[in-house]
Image (cartoon, rainbow, N blue to C red):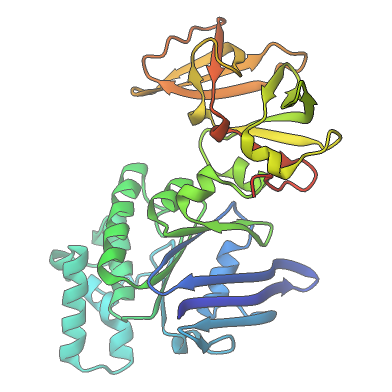
Length: 364
């Protein structure tokens, strides 16, 4: 049974539709990340799941139970916010136990749940401190502990790490991953940070203008993007794109564009692109490698080399009228010199082909 379902969910504010006919099924125990830029509808979707926003159309089900019109307290969810939302006059322990005490749970059970959550989060020594005496990471642990003690069916996280510095975010990502494995609870996590999505998610739902563009595992959205939006959104540095058209010459299919003619990958034959069909080719910087020769070299003039230790990020341009930019992630010791020619190669499997008009991948 799915832990959470959204069936044809729509959200409108007056004449403005911010979430459009959304369908999403989150498996029980899954860590689903809603990823997208600001204003794409991901936080609004999370707030509808929580019951903090009314649904304009459609249905939400948690554990098979319709909760579309239930109050937040009746949905069996717990939410962790970006700003922690801790009561400043209460200690960490009191903050964690507040919802249980409000529900008049037995004192012994409340104490046991708080102690267990504190043990899981390694904050047992902080339970008597007020929020002002805690660091940002410690406050976020308390906020997570407050959610854990409720033992909900579904955890909801709304950009919980955004207020932390880069080093602490990395540490808390690892802690959240470990916590999910321990608890095994259905989790929906909103973020605009690709690193959080790729490292935490069982699956990622990629949002764009109130719609989900692709739902899949981190590996699949990176290696098999379903459309141009996902291809350009996922991955740092961003994918290199080239305009092209297909042609058959001497019995083989070529992909021709400004300054290149590349043999088409074997899988493209099944898509049967037309000669008049505008195509967009994509190559991830990580899939390019230095080396002259080979069947399809991509020649660039090097403009910038950013040495990053084990890697070098090389940016150059093709010797064409438009001087198209190309980025490549090469080994740290790569022999790339400024204002010198560099031959880059790739394999057929690394080439992505999209229909320019529809934006859809032709790989299927």
